[in-house]
Image 1: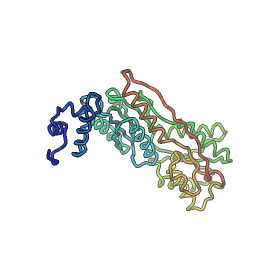
Image 2: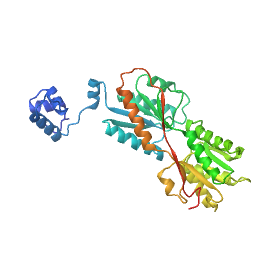
Image 3: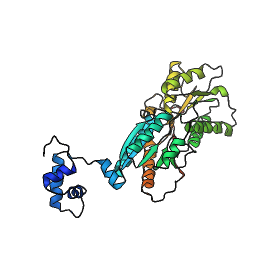
Image 4: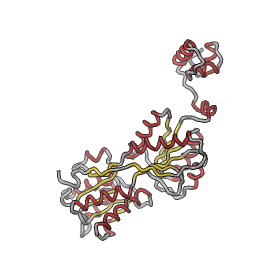
Length: 341
């Protein structure tokens, strides 16, 4: 057999003088095939770099053993942590993964749902784009394929959702600031009506309320992109106030790190003058000085858990949609940005 030809089951069978079904079963380690035949088939497949066509196999078995994953921003540090958990768990359970980035766009998100279906994935893990206005397309897809939402979710989609308790985690972060003696606490959050941002804002408000602190609207800074750069800009705004905050809660580590950089620029002592808390416990939280107090959001566990529930639904014979919320626990990691070393 010429090595210039693509290695197919048919060509392997012709080379060995066997039937295509025998070659297929030998490659699948079928017990009806002798060890000698399996050895010959596998050696030839190796010699010619044969790779099974997973799409053709999926048509026969009605399963591709491929999972689709759609995230808002693949370069986001916390997202990469979740994806590590997804990839590891999928590999452990014998599944391949196709990952796509919606770029925060609802239209791109819908396009990728179509693409995943065309690729014949067995199910989809989806973290919603921030600008998702309508979930109608998602509801349609959830009727065709098993779907699990994670991290950025919506209560309008009846499916399994893997999340943390955003409100409780934010409450604990802000309450920690208050317990260290801070009373004028600012928040840096998103302008968009994202589920995560609103829940974290709710936790911030509850911490103020339960500690008898009145809300000062000037302490609420909203920005579309919760990045390091916008964390810097937000801190500049807060420092320009006549009545400066003595604590800052940023709903991402990126914004918190940006705030710390801005405070350094203006020679503000951290945490003595202004303490800072972030959210997610990214790898950068220990690189910045002072090290950042932050909510530990276990991304890998979220990813692994989402995969387990999705595969359970893929293998389920129950045709009814499962609606449930799976909550992953968080904890606050206290470092030097809120307490002196």
